[in-house]
Picture 1: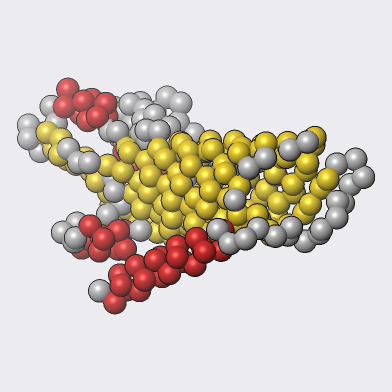
Picture 2: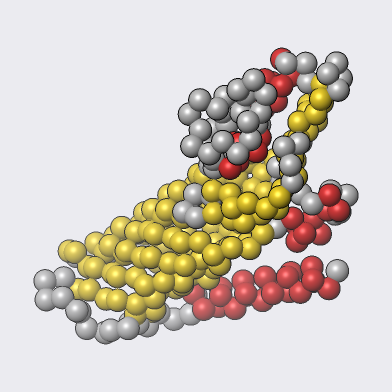
Length: 268
């Protein structure tokens, strides 16, 4: 309980302080921003192993298992959403290039929140067709990150500016995947979960703190903006080390977690 209260207090304090930072009066060496848009990660689930790059789980009769899918970075993720805010801190007041007004600094995305729904209905239909009874569950994945790294801002012409950034991201990731299928005729079961057994009966916030995983990822992005309004693209590759339980064994692995985002950006 103390850990949960500490995490909640830290999150609220960070949001309050960061919001005050990005909405303060702008200086020549600092620009705050808000970004809101769509986030995609993972890929569609596969039923067979014919084109898997990672065959961690062999399934049955060439069928792709839940484990083999997630090891290959396939989570059945639908289009998700991202909201983030931060600030660019520039080192130089005058331009570094004679042709274009250019500044170099740090881009600190103080908080980035991502949510994706996971759809395993087609995977469940395959097992149902094969005589299994499937325990349907509502799946989702979410993360909270703070990212920091260098940024170069080039004023090409007029109010047209391009920001290019590369960041390291401290990321707290949660995936609620908890799939179970049972065949009464063969007395066979298939299951996969990122949820620790002792967290399944916990309340929602408590379960997130127990089942979540922390990792360091990379982020590469660019923003094209005219004045204060722009379009941001980010590629957020990497992997998250997580414990899992499955009918193919339990363990701890690094699971692919590559994310692509497109966002509207508002400089403040």
